[in-house]
Image 1: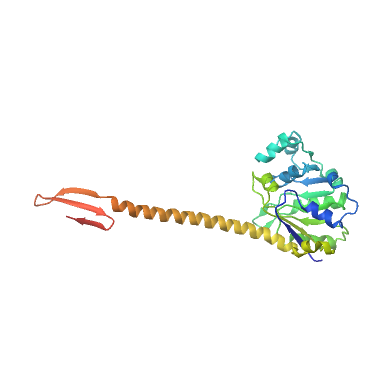
Image 2: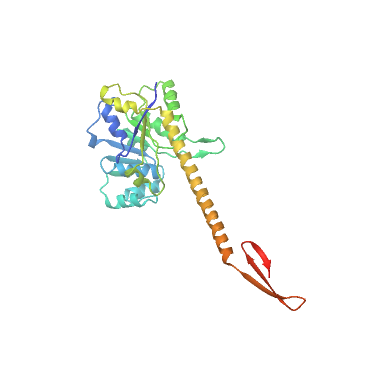
Length: 291
């Protein structure tokens, strides 16, 4: 199976939905666009920002395993620090509920956004994707027609491996996409509202002439996963270069300032010689000399 992706730029909505509805091949029985139901697995800064964004126009159920977070969300209190999320929960008429019951949430969903934690394991040198696969297994059990969208940070090649893994298990329907997130903590909803880029990986080419432009933008899902890692690496390098550049600039400025100052400073030390005459030592930028 050829793995493909569609790169979309500067959209304010979660454009994966538009893509899926345009090609209309995954689920022929979709309801009207405004009536779709979305379940979001995980209410960290990735999951909660997406849930808040989509709840403006769709019915969204946020799933978490921590009762305190679920209770806060149902009381319109953000469990994380994000000014935009806090404002939207308090002021916007969001169609958002939170639950501990993932099974019922996924069973009734058209889309399941997977934003489960994938903590890095330094011993294995690998991201722990256990929670991602737990969500996938549960969705396949209760609602195999649902379209799953991975937003969690995953290893390069992971999506491809999932397709192979579940194909070997005999899974007939496996509607999985990958859409990497480029969000900042405490600015997650803002970054979702005004994204720098939106990237969606989908494992099929849309075989219709009117989708030629989209197909020209298609790359492999593995490349999409690598793109996120490359973006993070580049951002880290850029920050390092900026810090290094600023530090070099500061050192250079200090050196120039020191040189200018040394030209103006004259420290005169007065002492009496053996002959009873005064000796003046003048220190300048060329060193010291006596007169």
